[in-house]
Length: 472
Image (cartoon, rainbow, N blue to C red):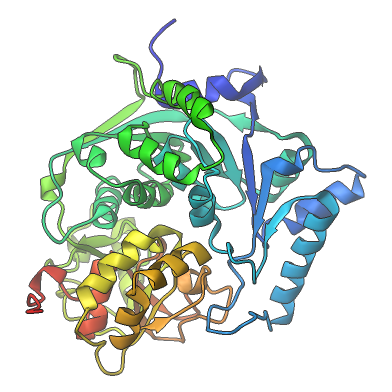
């Protein structure tokens, strides 16, 4: 047999049958649902008098529409959002599907909840009606987002007609410099290859810089790879992966774990496996990054100047730059550092994990949010929130002037009551900075948790490396 990539091995192991040269019928190990991409799928099943084929291989979570301000019990007051949540609950009851509803202690963002519940394991195929399902590649699982009609197909058959992707490898060697993180790394990569640079590809990350990252940091990388157009993101399982899964997959007894571990260690691209495209980068070149425009690839080093239209490679690129700057109320060739912010949001499926909150708490301990800045921290799940409280992180954050919220998607997208108003500028740890993403007329600057914390403390976009060391 010829050498195969990790992606090809995962697809081959889940192929029920070949449809044609470009498409296969793919078996699905786990299907995740949320409140806004599943209603039509359930309605389609009901209209056809079909049942969910394998209810135990589904998990539903309410997270996008849910309010995150402190309230017990949590109540969804928006009528349309309440109806979405009620419909999901009704459908799950009817079909026997596990639901993490608004007041479930395990409720949270699907892409944070599933790994921490031990549901994501190497070698799996995991689907969800959400593009950031690529997150699970950090644990050696093939995850990708699907559309509503595909959700219905998975519910009915536990399979999906799947078009094969091309393969890409991105190798990053070297050590990330002081003040940088996996968020800076992925923003830097996207800015280098472009928002369409990985379009149509399943991307495998490799290299010593990736190997040095924690499992949670790898999730940030894989989560945002879709912002370069990728159809999937993968990192081969290693000791870090196995330690994370062992900690969370508590249902595996010793014998099951031994068998699984042996198989998982084989999940890697073969020596000599051919990729359709390949990039190599040096992590030592990475600096703290921040977006200046309205696409994740419109990003720059925090100590650099915003690009000029005259320097763009084409008239179309120059026009896109001018439009983005007009929306963001910025000027070409100006420094990005020092740009005032009104809001700071730390959370989302990109950076709402316990590791992210520890970084922020360590940075803001003994300091305070700048006047006129409203800053909030939204844990990615109930488990993350409880862990943070057990470690005293919530007290550090609230003493520093941050709002400590309940778990949910919150200000990542304008589907709940955490939204920017027209013209408000936000330093955000989320994954998208599109026009109106956080609220109509809102201006979003993507950055790492450390950079967002620095912005909260100073009231403007700030190079975290310039903050004076604390003298505790």
